[in-house]
Length: 495
Length: 111
View (cartoon, rainbow over the protein chains, first blue to last red):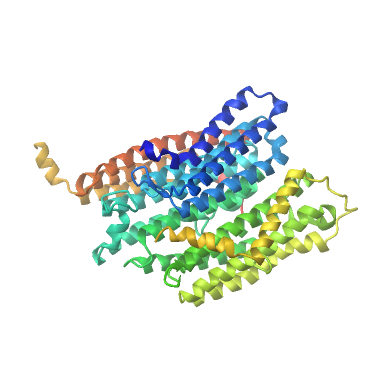
């Protein structure tokens, strides 16, 4: 146990920093509060450095008696979560006055949620998955209601009540998986019985029980991924929660949920087993419903954060296409669907963070999230508006952005998996989504506001983040190979 | 009845049906209660149904790692307590603004 403790280092560094931030918060005078953010960033950097050293020394292996795994998949997602968390902390500096004396709590909870997500990426035991999931969720419930204002508290309470029901549903599904396999290990490296080996050796007599458990797991995780019909909380929380928290949820929480779903369904249930087709069909249907409902609801939104909420539901539908197309293998080895999901999630992280930080930079100065107040923003706040435009193009899936490559990649996987009907639905949905994404762009560049007063510039750090996000979206739109190869290596960890 | 006779009379299916009934009642309460605290009670019932199911499987299924189920149940109990604490705190925060925790009156955010 102690011999493999170093593999747990990255998570440990982030957790310990969360505690240190809370302690430092007690003794730091008010005007030095910004140093807390520096401490939190240092913790994330320490986690990333530790992870880098583990990779360089080739320490990839399962650890803690097979309940966690340090493999290419968890490494990819851990780097993603560390980067997302760092970006959100930097962006939150612009928002800090509104946190008032709660800045320490914000940072500590953000770090705890991040460590939960990192655990989630590596967990391969049902108990570990459950604990990591709750560490992430409970931190996020509190984060959503941190300002204790009217809208935020309401959003947090709704998020928590629905989230608790979803957790119970997941647990019921897990209980039946345990009953079938007699163990909570998803996979074992030493040939001991595990859920994966039970299913691989299973017969038709097990099928109904497995489908029962599968439906409960898909419903519960569907809530975390904001899949229709379990999406009710998403727009409420995105509108009511503090903007940095909404940015974190829209990217980090979604990526973590898809990571654990890939882990359970791709590594546990397996694409080639006798229940493989059952869960692929389940996700194909959910994908079609999710993207259609998300896009139609997004069309009528007047609040930009709410619109981004419905847009993130629609995007969840696109990710699900990858899960449905998981059996499209390139060269018989790499699952195009699974690597498509991972690649799409990474590009989506850049894109949606860019969009949310731009919204934060603009709304924090106009004091309004209404789309009509974005009129003339292309001239009033050139940098955030340009980045927002760019990210909206990427969310729509237009070239030369990363969103375009991701959509082409994942639709190609779906065609190879003989899901042509799903691709047709998805392309039609892309056309619908162009209406509301480009509607914001039209408002910003073609709309006019009274007098068009210039907005106060955002801090240098925020503008730097915006430029990095836009550069990432453009770079991976033109030259995506490094990221695609990393995504393919990540899913190859499942063998 | 001596204890082993009692054990012979209660089989896995009986406990699973009990778990399923508890889970259904819990989810009905969670979805139909107007009071946020009531919803929370429904959730607790669902979690306890999960615990009953886990313990039953751990007791009756022949497996190499029978303790996994009981350990899992203990984790569920612990985490549920943490979640309930946060839920009650949020309910108080909402009550300060609205003087109600009825979900159908908490409707600032919709559609």
